[in-house]
Image 1: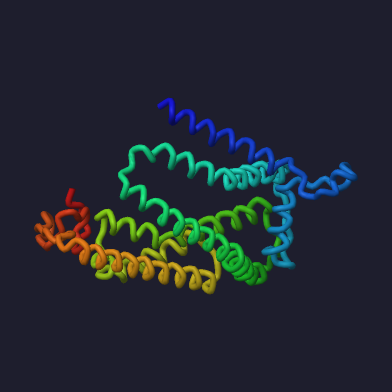
Image 2 (image 1 turned 180 degrees about the horizontal axis):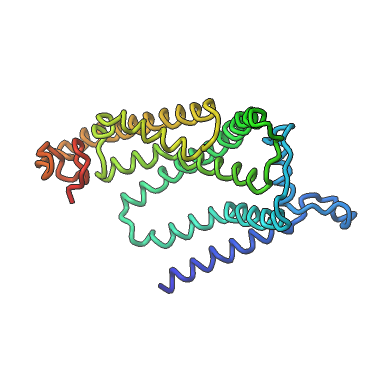
Length: 280
């Protein structure tokens, strides 16, 4: 517990320092020459760049409450402070669990984490540069249909951008989890391929949860990307299964019967590939 508390303190201190830095650090070096007129906090510059990048020209942001801009300032500072703290958090978690890992588990971490980071960052870029602009543009016609002017709450706008960008980054990591689930016997690829239609329905539900109210084009793009990532994950997991069967002929060779549906299941499989029920 002492080791855990020590590493938790490091993460918390890093989060506090990062948040305050984003909140007060000048974004413009000309601040040194004229502190009164050139001071722009780093978080203000970030929010300005977001507005310039994705806010449609016909849309105006408004503060519905006096404290709305202040709330945005604090929440956005915390959000980007947390983003800056993420590498420290990952490092401290790894150093905390590292002594308990077997050598083969330790070898699995590095490629998995690298793959995870690449996919997550790719998802953030795709969400910010593609989904967010298309999503906002797709919502504009509804203002005209309702006879309303496109005035949007400043908090609502930035929450939309942050949430959609972050969730797109998360769903991009799907192949990593599929490969790990197969590798550690939680699921098998034949279960995924057999129930592919249900997986696609689930992916579509996730799309509508992530992008509520967006246009069909944005939903279709995100669903297509998720479907491709799912197929990539299944392909990589199948490749791993084939490689392990060649290296270890008895890998998952022992079978038993599912106690629910009676179909054959591998001894080290957690869920039945036919009925999906747990064997533990």
